[in-house]
Length: 252
Image (cartoon, rainbow, N blue to C red):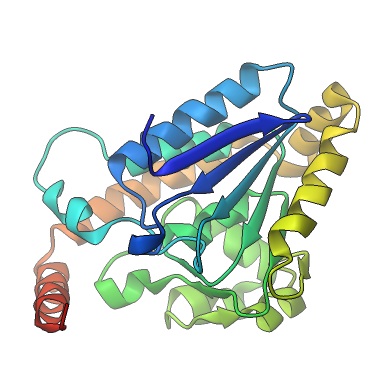
């Protein structure tokens, strides 16, 4: 387990908090593996009826830690992020998310696997893969068009345009907007309500709604193959070199 994840279970709800606010809760390999472990434990535990995911500080998650992510490009072992994404697809425990501030990259695509999502008025959802010369992941190329329609999904995945909380609500991407400072409390109430439902019926209903997980896993596999090709491409290398140069030039 990592200090950058806070995990606590009470009253049937496993609360998972991204606890790296100084880095806008960017996810490291250790954090991804910790998330996989937590979700596996939740599925096997009779005491966990729901999972609640949130971010410490002013952001939900800035996505994968870029520095660590780029350091793994030429390695042969599997990206920990891919293990997490696959676990999202097969997780049997209902998931609730409380989103405050920025949800970028996988910080947004993981939400498509959640059952209930509540956001603060300043929440911002962004999938900038195209701007990095990359392709979508986490089965978002399948789930997002199904949820909000092809035209609006194209704005998010092909144009790389961010959505505000108001836009996300109007599109049905999230369930509600909570007043500033109250989003975690609202999400906790909903997670507790889920946890109070009959466990077997809740999971069975969720399976019926989500459909065959193999369809998601097949899309995740296809996206991962194309993501790897894109990541090793010349156009991606140029984009990331420019990104890192800009990052180094910023004052500390």
